[in-house]
Image (cartoon, rainbow, N blue to C red; front, side, top):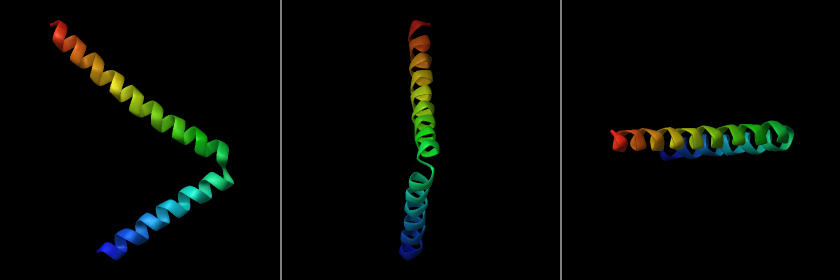
Length: 55
């Protein structure tokens, strides 16, 4: 099972590097989108707890 996990991780990294080299603008947009989604989720959780605290 460890070998399969290493192979999968290696393939994912190889694809990421290939994508970064062949389409750098699209890769940057994907990273920005991912960070935006994480940031949006954090803001939503914060808003939830603020609304909960305010009653």
